[in-house]
Structures are given as structure tokens and as C-alpha cells.
Length: 257
Image (cartoon, rainbow, N blue to C red; front, side, top):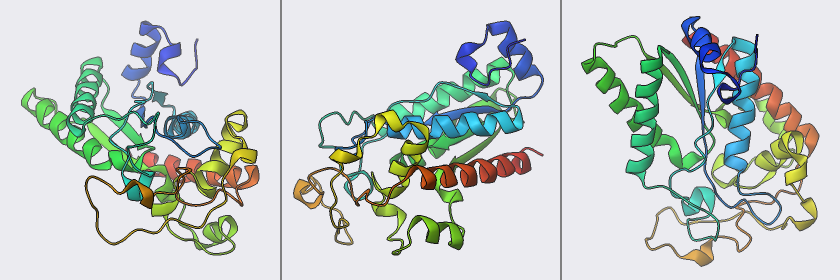
């Protein structure tokens, strides 16, 4: 018997049996987005995918291929959509893709879905896709489909963990793009895709309390990261991985109990 948690590695009968047994389905939702000079552009895909797999092993779940494109990078959370390589979707495209996937999962017989966001800007379009899909399913007489949606970084909130990750003080998630948090996780999970010799050590980005469109590109640090990755380490990444895996596993069990 194939005990992989990766849906793409199963045959369709194996998948059908697992779905029929009640296995929750996991969908990582990421983006193709620049993450500075020192990391690859698929960070927002690789991290939620790895965490989905880790949690799925704990809860007998199954992991779909990640959505590798996300909503447009915003300047104050991802540096902006103006960098070469960052390849984004309109909100409606992302919304309807999620709606379509949920409808197909329901057709397969699945009734439990965990959507793990790896790209801040995706958040409300994920919610809209879920809302439209559940409305469509209700019209079709399916009323027992349940979705848990989360962003993995929200599970890193214990003061002692924050202190260990940021001994000099935590500046906030809004400028963590390409900084200590993501870089540490990548060092733990995909060290071959990180080159710290290319990392740019710079002061945290500062922005006014409003947005301007078209954006003023010069407000984003030229390297693309919003805070310095200095201080990142594999050990910190392993701590984040443990905290997130445990917290999300418990949340999924509680939500679907």
C-alpha cells in the first residue's frame, strides 16, 4: 500500500480509498515572488508545502500540489510587484481557481480541506474562493464540506519563541519579507536554495501609513527584502518548523473533531 501523503504520488484508486476513509486534504497556496539576492523565488511555495506534508503525516492527511502563483506582491508586505521574476495573478483568477479546486474535491467525496497560505497577499482571495465554493456546494445539496484556512506564521506567537528568534527585538511580521523568519525556515528545509554570502544586510524598510499607486519603487530596499536576514540560522528554522507543525496539527484535529 502506498502510504505517501502526496496526492500526486498516488494512483487514483489509492487516492479514492484515502478520501473515502475521511483523510483531510491540504492545499498549500503560495506565490512566485522575489525574496532578495540570497533566496530563490519559490519560497512562498516551498515553505507551506513542507509544512502541509509535516502536518498531514500527523493527521493522516493528503497534500495537493501547491498553487504556485499568488496575488500581486504589495510593497509593504512583499516589496512590490515591480521586480523581475515576481509573477502574479489577478485576484479574480486566484479566487476562481480556489473555487474550482474546492468543487472538484467535493466531487471526489472529500469533505475536509486545510488551506495553508504562504503569501500574505493571498489572504482575502482565499476567503472569497472558499465563500463562493461553499455557496455553490450548498446549491448542489452539499452542506457538510468544511474548510480550515490559516497562515503558518500566525502559530509562532509564544513570547519565549519570539525572543529566541529575535533576541534584539521583533519588528513585526509586516517587514519580515525575506528576513530572519523565512530565511531560517529555508535553511532548515532547503539549504541548497539559500546563499547567505549574497544576503544584503540593511536597515528595516520604513513606509508611510498609507499607500500610493502606482507605487514609489524607491521606497522598497533595492535588494527586495524588507528586513535583513542577518541572524537567520538552521537552528531557528528547526524551532519554527517544530512550533508550526505542532500548533497546526493540533488546530486541524480540533477543527475537524
